[in-house]
Length: 418
Length: 166
Image (tube, rainbow over all chains, first blue to last red; front, side, top):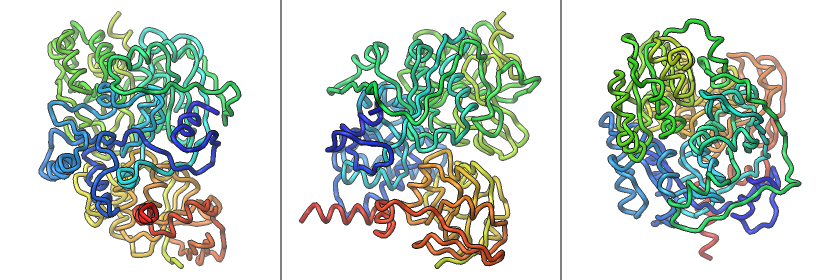
């Protein structure tokens, strides 16, 4: 069996599972946010069950439109907050919260070998820790809150093997944009993307979170990494319960194995309006920008901010550009304060915000007007994603975004740091 | 038997196109329906009639997990969505809330916007009444058929839980 199949099998009463099979899978953690929880709660009430199956295995995070951007959003969070109080479900209030996919691993709530389902498509982020994590809708989450399990079709696994070592300014974001550029936005439809090879072994955990996070942008059900020493070092101080490390069998069957040599790839930029429109940054020509967003569940972690700070230190954001930097959680924010990144950002002329998904999905904290162009470290550049349907979003890594903020047009970090 | 006029779209229609995130601060289906497809087809909400059918090439509903997307489509009066393939979360969401979906690439290729279709969800037969052609959609696996005939995931779960208590 593959890594994903092993984890799924361990959460059923079966010894073996194979792609295409329908299963009821026991879940270790269920997640919802301020957009998806209100519908999940409404549907949960219809199941006829009074109490959730285990309040310690359900987490709700107000992160999308929070701190509440308007009255309607405040009402939604109120529904979620009151449900959590009533049921004893884990809830992170503004001031403790972060973007859910940055926060939950930090809090030790997701561990290797877990099955995690979340009413958010980027739930697949947790595959970086060797768990099987997948996004679903509100009604799926409602049913799972009542029963503790959920139906799944066992997905086939595509193995992606990355050879070589990434250059100074390339990281997980570049590998995943390059991959989606190659296989397309439905290149891994219904499948698991298992990331392997020495290039991903060399990535820090933050880079692996970025890659697993964007598996859904290739249509995948999950992205997954094997657990190694780096994973153990991350998990050990955070875990408050036992966990299982699974390894893929040597004879595990893969639907496809794709090899990439990444030694020569440049930082990648995905042009509007698809994450699959990836190009090397040097080939873009002269593209002026109005806004830069550095943050999100894709690239809002400490190492991401550190990269941005390396580029911004001692330099100024272009006078025509709004540069908005959003640490992904309170822990990331505090680390960025104590290690003096925030001062670098403010001195460079960037705006720094409390954690929120905010502009990534066109919620608040940096909405684009018609004709405006933004380069962002986020995950989607669909029509209207960050505001006006006549605006444009380019996706890139934090170093490219920071360099572009200085230049006022899309450039690689080398262009402003040398 | 469903019958309706076709609204046709290309590949990779994402959930931000189906219902932009700026409207996700409400959950009422009727409210969501007012903005359905707004950013890619401004005329959709004024032209759609109860029973109409959405058709799209491949990977329909990609992107976010928002269940607001199938809710908006259903509340706009759409009776079913036919596509070559669907993004997986959208597929689950639609089945769970009772918005019928059919996968049939041939029907998509053989149909133009504005054609009238007659659809039999049980047999998967899709008749293009405008062009006099008949197509057959891929059948649902047994488990999915059971879920659909229960009336959606919540009803299916209620039945399961009732079974456990006996």
